[in-house]
Each structure stands twice: as C-alpha cells, then as structure tokens.
Length: 52
Image 1 (cartoon, rainbow, N blue to C red):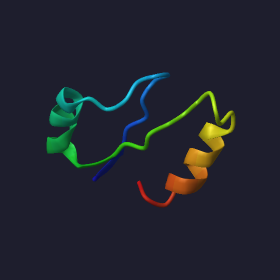
Image 2: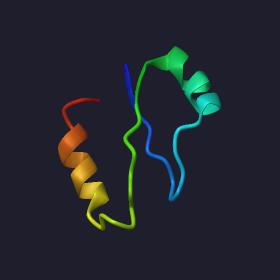
Image 3: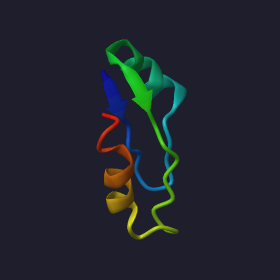
Image 4: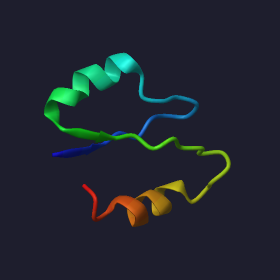
C-alpha cells in the first residue's frame, strides 16, 4: 500500500513519524512549500491521483 504523507506548514516527515508509518506501506512524502504555491492541493491531486 502507498501512503501519501502531507505535512503541515513549515514541517516535514520526521524520522520518528517515518518509523511509525513504514510497517503499513510505501511512504510518499513530498516536500511541500505551501507559501510559494497557492495551488498546492490541486497540484498534489494531479500528481498523485494515480500513484496511491
């Protein structure tokens, strides 16, 4: 199973969070710059709708 991890503003996927999620599947954790890209949600949907 693929897991799309979307972090919050100014955050990322920490090592500890990755360790918790890894047993459940392949983790996809893009680096998101919400401030620079106001269309981030639309872009994520377009990019990952067929990958998860």
